[in-house]
Length: 169
Ligand code: AR6
Image 1: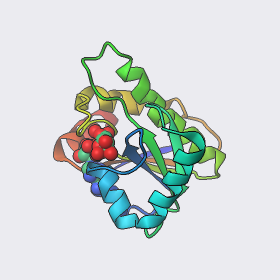
Image 2 (image 1 turned 120 degrees about the vertical axis):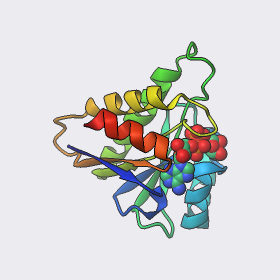
Image 3 (image 1 turned 90 degrees about the vertical axis):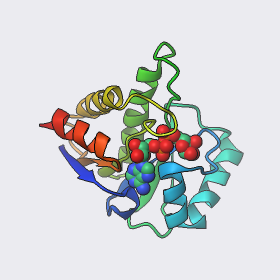
Image 4 (image 1 turned 135 degrees about the horizontal axis):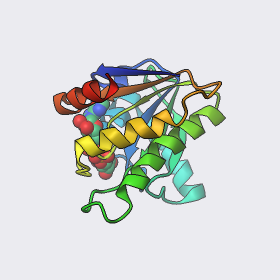
């Protein structure tokens, strides 16, 4: 498995699956979630609504998959990060679950190149350095997996990009 780092907009990445930092409602929102729904168009929300009807809300740490509409990626995997509340409420474990459940779901669907945003580090206020360490550790647990080809960390803001650059050296 190759780990790559890109500074940019995840909606422009041509991979098997991009991951969305959604909320439990799966009905869209701001940040990367807003960008994905805006650029991908209504197909994504249609699929999210169907998932809501059959499975209910998506709890933090879990992941679901939809089509990708007009995006260059083949699929979108929506995961719900933890809201940072000081660190005593299993936020770290929940964040690791986001990365690992998204990868597991991708593999189940035959998707082997996956791009992640920096889940929970926007409006959910997870400290960026802690989140980067957790994300890289969680992904590294798939090292040696026979199918997983590439995980790309897509950093939108300069601070996250700098942190990942340092940690991935
Ligand atoms: N491409 C890649 N990363 C992006 C993009 C983009 N186009 N836009 C923003 N980011 P956030 P959260 C980065 O707030 O903290 C939504 O309203 C951004 O720099 O999008 O998990 C949902 O509906 C930051 O580092 O997600 C939820 O309600 C990272 O994406 C809530 O926000 C995550 O920031 C989820 O909060």
